[in-house]
Image (cartoon, rainbow, N blue to C red; front, side, top):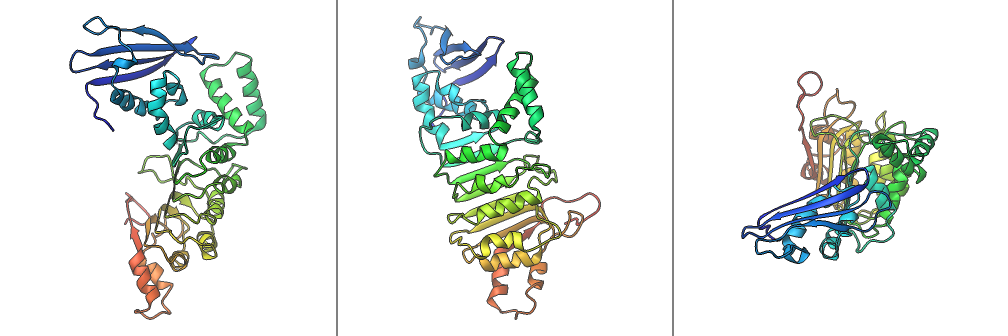
Length: 373
């Protein structure tokens, strides 16, 4: 990234009738710019230059006077937070040319609004190599067709404001088959994606959890990560047991997978070795080198041993705060896994492999109760 010379700021504001984007740049040699663009909030596609300042020598400031490194530096940050990032590219052809490769190389979606509008995008100018979806808290915990239709009707009637607009997005997500169906549509736009990162909750009450398999079957990533969106010190199950089952059904087909990270995950109870090992026992994962499982419950030592034996390419298996039962029981330790191979001699290669590959760690320590490290 080019070095940013001077100070630059970008801000977007929304009023009743207009959306405005303001860019301010203060250079080190008296080169200043204040550009403000507006467009109608409803059905507005074209941006109009509403205000611009003049430089100290009286010349009118324009895009030609803003250094391209400034444009790239300040607008790259805005792509991550803008509800519709492509709007920024539409302001000017210079911005579009500079930012289009950045926007399409790594798709970052941080809200239901961004997910919905990305699904509706007709064409991408490039082939994304990375895809990230982060939906904090309980933002996807909604079901109910009748409620969605009522909210949509209220919004269309013109009597709803911000909350109704949020509910309207939820209604549109439901209209497109729910969160997991929308995820599938989004990933279909990224056919050669190599890195996928999900930060979201699944819920036991969600009837659409079987769609997780179909959503993730359309890709073959090199790296996959699903973690909870909560702060790191929170203990929560972002991936509920039923979601875990459908996730591993999708993993079966990922022949290019090199790295797998799953945290805040609950395996089915009572514990079984089938879910964790079934995805790898009879399916080829020739380049899978690293697996990290953190804050996981109901993982059996037998399944861990079988996992190591079934993946010959595996170099590191890290279990961080991983429990054989609930979080109030004991963490899995290397000795627990080796105990499942007690019928083997100490110099057996399978035992040696467990010692080489497996890493059991504790990150969170309890104040009271349970396994305290």
